[in-house]
Image (cartoon, rainbow, N blue to C red; front, side, top):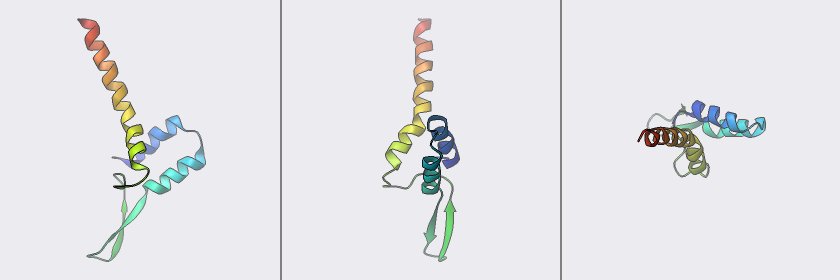
Length: 79
């Protein structure tokens, strides 16, 4: 999942800038690589097992749900 795309989707529905900044800080995180003993910035994906992950994933997929519903309606109207 592209974190910037998710933040864009959130920004379309949420106007509270402080909340959006909080979500940005939660999504832009660093992971520690034990082999190289370095931190790397993560740009994609949601933290596995994170408390935010389930509802953020649902919000991210709402656009796909809307697309599928419209597509299915247009197909059923033709018959």
